[in-house]
Image (cartoon, rainbow over all chains, first blue to last red; front, side, top):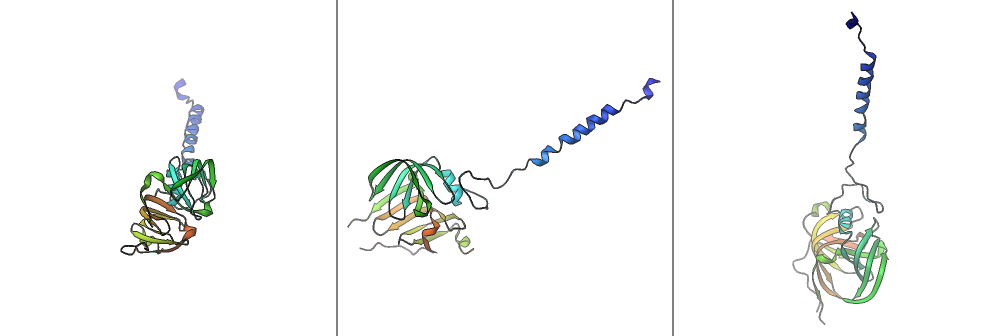
Length: 130
Length: 75
């Protein structure tokens, strides 16, 4: 006779909790464009061939930065931002291929930068012989 | 869009300071900063520098076009 009594309230409580646990999954959405720490960046997809992706790949390696004035700096690339401002560690200044000065840590303003290249990527240099 | 068509092909870039770069255009952004692969820098006061990969600052770019057969340095 006691079996007729269905003890249901507790079962309903369990069902409710199960429904709630499925919701948090919707909140997790992986973003396609990663947000970059240093400065602003274009909204398109960022790959290594893209300027911003290329700069991030360069971080931590020795780079050669040439300025509009013709100054050349080599050093360990610490960080870059969207304006091509560059922070370089153990920076050495070169003029005409010869080391002129040795800076510890240097900050180069992006608007004066002509190009940034990884130093290991320089395959050959041929100065003009006059 | 015009530069989009050059993606993956050899381009010749002329800068404000009369430097020329010839390389394969890997990518660029809204400011025409360009990533070139197997690039050669022709600096008439210095010489030639070959680089596997370089990022060129778009603010100094004047012309982007097809490379001439063999750029010669003035004697």
